[in-house]
Length: 151
Ligand code: HEC
Image (cartoon, rainbow, N blue to C red):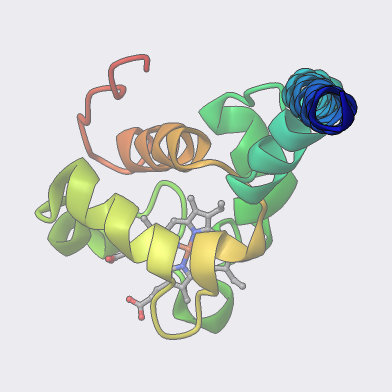
């Protein structure tokens, strides 16, 4: 009889422990699943911000400018006057040796800057916009560069 009581007691304890353990494991895994869902929701919410900062990092206004527009906005400051030794728009002689670099060579100079010319001519242009501006300038200065293929 004594033994039966003891056995009953132990049985009760073991059952309680197992039940609590199962409840805990269930609770923890539910909490974990909630976290995963939250993470996805947060990613969705910050996506627009992330995209905007990527756009800002790669330069540009978001609306692509034509070569002429970028030229008028920025490049003209030096390239219409010849300031700081810039090859002037329409000065075929000044452009002739540079045209030999081809669009890719000229684009490289424009992106990195060259001597008195600051990188990107000091603008926030994208590489595509720069390429269009170079084609615009070069082709008004004796060149016959092709517009870069649309990306
Ligand atoms: C602050 C003045 C300045 C501005 C603004 C400027 N440039 Fe220039 N650019 C120069 C000068 C100076 C040179 C000549 C560099 C040299 O060969 O020493 C030059 C040269 C170049 C060349 C020839 C590079 C080569 O390798 O021969 C290209 C292409 C060019 N600029 C594109 C641009 C474009 C596109 C813009 C506008 C987005 C621009 N530049 C704005 C000053 C400027």
